[in-house]
Length: 319
Length: 167
Image (tube, rainbow over all chains, first blue to last red; front, side, top):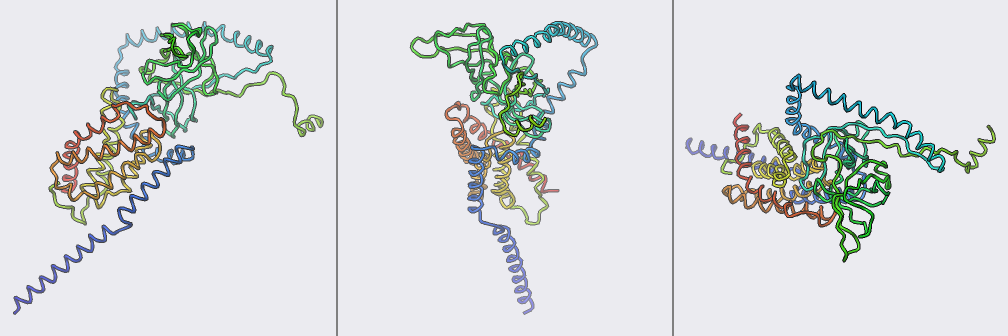
């Protein structure tokens, strides 16, 4: 009898435990909305985000906040190559350093002598523009940024640099290296920014031929050493070897920086436009240091503005 | 996955999950030369799939969505496209996880292939919406390499999971 009772008790106990466990599992799985509802919410929110960002820039603050979590990963990935470079730099021999120093001093001397004339030329330019009743542009400020060796998408020419909105970088700023235009700031995050190179298939830059001022647009080809000039007629005055500089139209790039050298011109008699390609001047695949440019694009008027506003007339009369 | 389901009161936290996903994100953006970069699979999705199959009661759709959003920021895509793709794929994995656990790794890899294909298809659609017809055929290569990488990911993460549970 006692054995029977014990058995029953044991059974009861185990079934109780089983129930408990079942409840626990059920609680775990019925916690919150069902999986279908969750998916629905996730899909709707993602689509809303996609639509919002496709049309406006309103989500930039959210991106900036999320980049606080993600940017450390970029620096983490960049770290090995940084370490490699730094060790390579620190084990240079004395002779190498001395030679490099001499070379740099020589270069500095050459540049200095070139600059001697520059100041006079600048003043002359301003005077000439004043004669033409034109306005002139103020100089540009630059910030040196270093490339992060990170690749976000293989089929796009977008690179990351280590300066962001913390340094005042903002969207659409031109980016240069020592030889020419590199691209423009595509998106600025707090600690890094994405730069679209001029060779990206989605990038176009307004240029002019330095020799004769012929205006056109250079479009990226998707290859790192090639730009395409698709909008010039077959009889255009352009030859291989011509230097293309920024024309300043469009307002993103300041005028007069070298962009590319024309390397091929083939006329297509059966088509309205010639087939022209150019090689970028900037070393897009080699340089680690880039310059982000602040161009002060508000022209300084050299002749005083005519007074039009009534209040201003009053104020002038009071004076 | 032949192992028993995890005990409910296990001390297995989110630490290893987050750590492995961060590692996957780092692998995602490593600067390989361009010839290798076109093969770079979507490591984040592979890791997410593993965890959603192994511990479905802990890694759900919202986790996938959050990490998708972070991947969007990491790779500079339009906001929400990875979030959309990841949450859809993880939904399918969660629905089928009981059956998938019984499969051998090779058979799982076949399933992973279709998951990666779905994700890449969604990315393709969004990309086409932005600027149509500029993608090369190499865009689809990561799906294949991701499938081949699945046994590797599976073994590595299983090792992580088992060692962490023993502690």
